[in-house]
Each structure stands twice: as structure tokens, then as C-alpha cells.
Image (cartoon, helix red, strand yellow):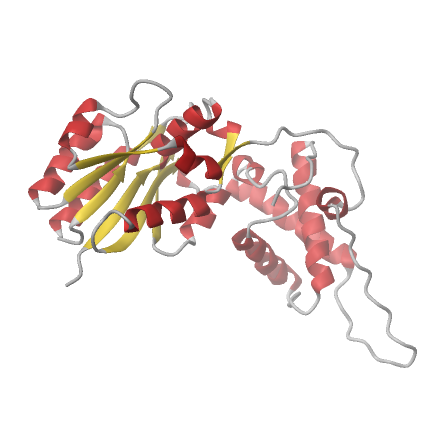
Amino acid sequence: MTAKYAVLVDVGYLYAAAGEVLLGAKERKEYRVAADELIQALQKHALERIPGELLRVYWYDAARDRVPTVDQRVIAQLPWVKVRLGNLNARGQQKGVDAQIRSDLEALARHHAVSDTVLIAGDEDMVPAVEAAQAYGVRIHLWGVEPPFGTNQAERLVWESDTVEILSADFLRPYFNRAPVPVAVTPAPSPAQVFAGRTVKPVPKAPIGQVTKLGPSRPNVEEVGEHVAQKWILTRGRDNIRDLLPGPLLPTVIDTELLIEAEKELGHSLRPYPEARVWLRDGFWARVYREFDLGVGISSK
């Protein structure tokens, strides 16, 4: 039987420590993280160091009322990744995350699901779970983030772990970027044209006498796009929708959800009409930009 290992990531620790050493940032809203690429890099790093095969990556984060943000929804779609959410209170403090990590670490060891575990964390509260997992024969490999000075991991946690490694600033730098500062712009009729720097191609007219397939109406589709945006603002919260800014590109998962919601409202498919997808996004972004009363520059993606 092939030995397996798991990677348990305290996202709050990882992001805060990396944001500080790389950007001097104190809050998560000050930077953006290419989380999917970072997770792939961590998987590759573990593959090169830990014997056996990866069971999965456990990604421990927090969200208001445990409603996942856009980024968290995208991460949850990644293969071999399980997102675990604690609660984020009004003061921005994580609640319940440490308890989830401790519970999973002990359960994996107790059920002999893994022989090794990579733990990316820094809190001394992890020590009892580390000791319990070791009692079941699991080796704990503690990874930390290079601190700007001193240390950012509890001394006892370092002592109790079987191996300790520091992820260098150079290793993490490609995945962290300072958040763009919103810039006010003059409103335009079509957000996609202005903010994406592209022009919507007109639908070519059919030659006289040729029958064409009747497509959807642009005003109708834009209205539905706005309606979906309004519904998401109400149900998912403004903070989650703000994560989509500056736009106008949407993560593939979210773009697909927008299409599906719109098709439900319209009662028919938009898939045969590429121009309708553009109108749908135009309507969506028009409502989002009005909600936050701001515009931004061209997306870097």
C-alpha cells in the first residue's frame, strides 16, 4: 500500500506572514493572491520532499457567516483541494479555524489515512494535535514563512514537529501582488468596452433572402445580467462581490454561474450566441460598478 501525505494550510497565517514579508502589508485587502498557482507550487514542493503520494490539500480559511468569497469558491473547484471555512467576525478575526485544523490532523492520524503531514501554521494551539498525530505514528513536517525579522511561529510548535522548513520570500513572491487602487473614471455606455479595452463585434447582417436564426435581444440580456448581479449582491454580500473588482474579467467558475443563472431567467440557452455572453457581462458589470460607485483600470489578467 502506497504511503500518503496531506498538506494542511492555515491560510490566515500563510497570507498574513507572506503579506508582511513581501509587501509590508497588515491586512489582506492590501494584496491579491494567485491562490491556484500558489497551491500548485506547494503541491510540487511537497512532492519533492515528502515520501508517498498526495492525499489532498486542506485549505483552512474564514468568511463572514461562513459564506465563501469568490476566491474561496474558485479554490474549492481545484482538484485534490478541500476548503474548510471558519467564521470571520466583525473585527476581521478568524473563529473556529484552529479547531478545524486540529480535528482533521488528529482524524487523519487516527484513521491511518496518512503517514506524513505537512502543516503550514504558526500557532502554539496546534501543539496538542501535533503530539496526538505523532502518537499514531504520523510524521509532522512544519513549514513556515520567512519572517522579516525574529520568528512568526510558536517555539513549542517548532520543537514538537519532526522536520521544519522555511518557505523563502523568493518562493512566495510570484503569487502575491499589491491590490490595485481604484481610480474614478467617466461612466461609459458599455463597461466591457471601456474597462476591457475591447470592442464588441457587431453581428453581421445576413444577405437579402437568407433566413437567420432569431437571437436574443441585447436589452433583455443586459437587464438579466444586471438582475443576476443584484441578486448576488443581496445573497452573497457586497464584500464577496467586491472581490470581483476591478473586472471586467470573471473567474471561469463565476462566469459559468452567471451564464447558468441568466439562462434560467431567460428560459433558453445563450450558448449559441457569443455576442449575448458579452451583453450579459456588460449588464452584470454595469450593476456592480453602480453598486460601488467606482471604476478601475484594465484588468491585468
